[in-house]
Length: 212
Ligand code: E4P
Image (cartoon, rainbow, N blue to C red):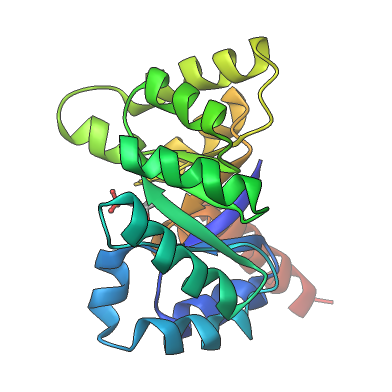
């Protein structure tokens, strides 16, 4: 499993990229809105930092509108992946973009059948939202387990991005289940580095070293 950062904050993106552990970036309209910057300018900046897939979401809900936005976004940089909501119009758009060799990430996936449909439409990535299922009393990891099994049994090429990750346990379990990627918020990414015994160990080694 590889990591994407889930953020639209330039400082976080720079820091995370410099950590050397992320392979790409995902954004969404809420994350972009929080930054209060022009979306296209933000994407241009980000493509200069992250050398990997960068998911940018369309806002239109109709097929024509999605297609139009997708072409503009894809024109910004070859690394841009078009993020499209899991709807009928969305999958129709995925089909066209896939034929045009434009990469797509089908987002807001909450059921295994939605993921299967997205894969059949030709999505490059699908994003099941683990945390949001947990929020309504379901288990997001069960969805991920079903998807990993279905994709393997059916030999589907579409890559699974475990999304809406809320904690390090989500990350470990997603890796065990065989998700291709986990897209993690900056706070969770930082948490992954830490263990109290690592800090205690460093302190002890340095204390012993000083006695030399
Ligand atoms: C994924 O691509 C989404 O941007 C993201 O993971 C959503 O996470 P949230 O449920 O914490 O908003």
